Every structure is written in structure tokens, then in C-alpha cells.
Image 1 (cartoon, rainbow, N blue to C red):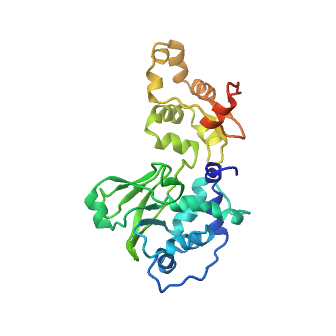
Image 2 (cartoon, one colour):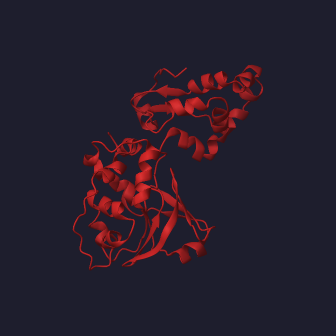
Image 3 (spheres, rainbow, N blue to C red):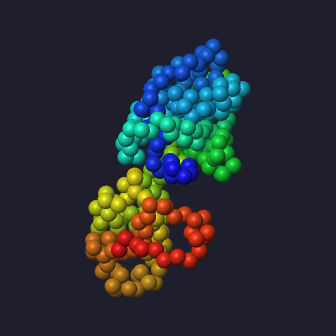
Length: 282
């Protein structure tokens, strides 16, 4: 694992918590986030995650004025299946959980009444690597009985609200919020610029998603956005139209946009490498 993105994609940080359920001694007299999650039903794994990731001290500060969306124990277990992961041999990577945990924090402290009164809003992440990146979580209180929290990779609902922790507020949620897409197929589903591509693949080449775009896939996709399918080359070409209506044609065209590679390409790596020829899937 060379960086946070690769670690997140591999999901090592999630399963380490499940593999070692160790309770750390925490003072419960102070009203702070660390002490509170240890004493709140259903947040045992989140509490231990703070310890394993080296964040217990930060969240023991009773002067913090923040909102924490704390994933439930069931949410952590569900993350395993979503990311296609196992528990074996991952306990040593628990420290990599820190950025994900900090992604669950916004400011200021807001109870559900305040969230509902504000309507649909984006709240900036205020701790860790996301603080200065413009990263945020969307809160949708349209259903006052089940407020929705949306991240890049997942959505969650508040299942235990308004847990007081000093000057802060904790809301227990039913899913781990992810600052990345858990799989390439998830990126297709959650990105509004890729709905045309998603429809073509789902209708004509669903096996491509199952075989190539699972949570552990390591490849680069140059994904055509919706507007790419309305260009003259696409709309005025009879051959292209026939290909897009045929499962084999969709598989072939999309495969031409896929670069299988153990090292995932990104914009920085491509710029540093300069002009290069790559081998595509088809």
C-alpha cells in the first residue's frame, strides 16, 4: 500500500477493527467523544477504531465543538462485504483507519433539530487530510425520522441521534462513510456524469461489471461521460450505433477504454511519465 487511496481501495483499515476486538482502558468521568462512544451501545468498534488509529487523545478533548457521525458495529461488519474483503492478516494496518474516521467529522456540533432546520446542506470536513481539500458531507433531512448522510462512496442513515459528548454531538449511523468509491461499478452508479455508460453496460454487458469491475479490481478506465455519447462521431455513425446496440460491441468499445494494470494510473503519474502507449482490455 503506497498511499491513502490504495489503502482505502484495498479496505485494510476497515477489517483490522473486526479482527481484534480489544477494549482499551478509557477514563469515563470526562464528557468527551472517546469516553462517550465507549459507553454508547452499538459503537464498540468505532470506539476501538479511535484507539487503534491513534485518535483517542484528539477526541478526548472536551472543548471540541463538532458533529461526529459514528458508524455502528453492524456498519463496520457490512463494510467488509461491500469492499470484498477478509479479516486475515490485516490487524497491523489499523492506523490507516485514521483518515476515514476523521472523514466522519464536521463542524459545529449539530443536533437533529438543527440539521432538519437547515434543510439539505453540505458540511465541510474539519479534521485530518480533508480539512483543507474542500471535502464535505451532504446531510438530507427530508425524512426527519431517518436523516440521510451522503459521502463520495456511500450513504448512511442516522439510527441513534443526539448523543451528547461535552460540547460535541454524536449521531450513530448505519454505514461507514467512504471518501472514495468502493469499486469501479460503484463509481458508475454514483456519478451522474456516467449514467449513459452505466445503462449501456448494465443492459448489454453486465458480466463486464461482475468480472472486471469488482471491489478489488486494479485498472484504469477512461470513462466516457454522458455528453460523449451525443457527439457527431457517435450519433452520425451507423457502425457505432450498431456496436452500441450489441452486447459484444459494448464490451469491445468499453474494453478499449480499460487499461488493466497492477499499478493504477492517475493524473499525476501520467503527467510525470509523459507520452506512453498502453495495452487496453480489447
